[in-house]
Amino acid sequence: MRTGNWSRAYAPGSVAAMQRILKRAAIVWVPLAVALTGLSGVVYASVQQDLRQGANDPQIQMAEDAAASLDGGAPAGSVVPNQSVELATSLQTYLMVFDGSNQLVASSATLHGGPPPFPRSVLASGRGQDRLTWQPEPGVRSAVVVQPWRDGFVVVGRSLRLVEERESNALLIAGLAWATTLAATAVAALVAAAVLR
Image 1 (cartoon, rainbow, N blue to C red):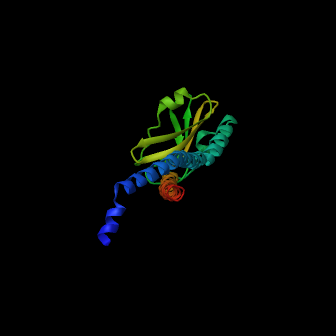
Image 2 (image 1 turned 30 degrees about the horizontal axis):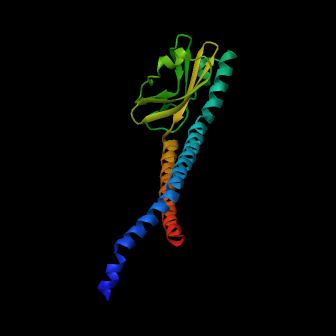
């Protein structure tokens, strides 16, 4: 009896019926999978951009305030924080002032005890406020705002370490949600195809 049941379950007609169910399920599920993939990508990109753009906010204020003070005649040293900031380890905001020759004249930033090598090409091409990611060495990344003033540029930055950790967490959450939703919709499509045959 058991042998007979096993034979009927795997008879050619049963295999053909299963193939039809799988085909109908795929017709429903593939467009859903494409839409879910696109939606997950849009959600992650939106969160990532919000995190990255938000990382510039304190620097924008500091850079604009420092440039206004310098334009008003304040000496470069007066707009730079007193505390030195080590770029390789600190999360604090730092400020650098460059003159019209793109030479560093005052700074609260250090890299391994010396002045960090900020690229002069960024200053040479700057015409207005610029916001960028600066990596003076592998593993050291900063969200930087470059603000022109009358006789040069102000550069304000801070570490992206915390922001990048949050971006990684957001990617993990989006990936798990994407995979779970794909699996759930695949099961639902199979059930619907089997019930509605």
